Length: 248
Picture (cartoon, rainbow, N blue to C red):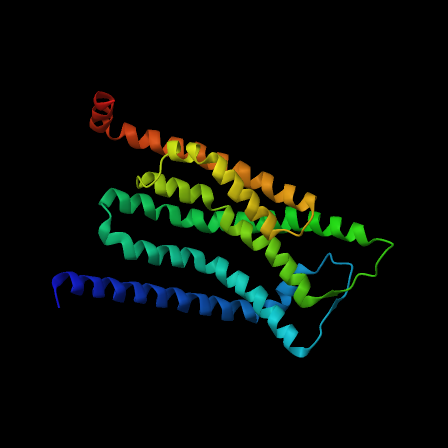
């Protein structure tokens, strides 16, 4: 076996170890969340005026696992980010290691902020709008599974989408992207964000607007942050700036 093949095998082994640690953390958080899932369930339905129905005993267990899974996922994000950092750490310089390490708490904070925005802003607005359509026309009855699937589909994507600015800052600091690339890709990015908002929301115009507008704002905010990081990076490399000006 050549040195290159041995190095590749070592990388795979290291990656496997990091994935296993992350999965163990997720399972531990899942178990811990499941212990308190009844209290969490009661809090989530505290303002609901409708009784939730179940179509079978297994549906109760499925709903509890859905709730516990979202909580476990949120708590696992900083662990997964740290394991990823440990995996790529040998390939980074000392400065890059310190820079990337500072992004880990932000990933968790932005994920929680996205979930909060989806749950406290988007979800109640969309639910109220849809219920208003059935007022006086239909007798509404929710099953637990469909209700929580609806809630999670409207809130969970925002947890990931709110991390876009931090991911953009991280990639800009590593030199993978820059604000010029983001500006040129604005049209196609807008189109993709609109498609995403349509896919993750119920088929009505109000829901699409409520999701699309924050996503576009997030993108523009990401471009601004990328510019700040890029300028700071250039200031720290005066020799490279001079060379760029000469060549241009």
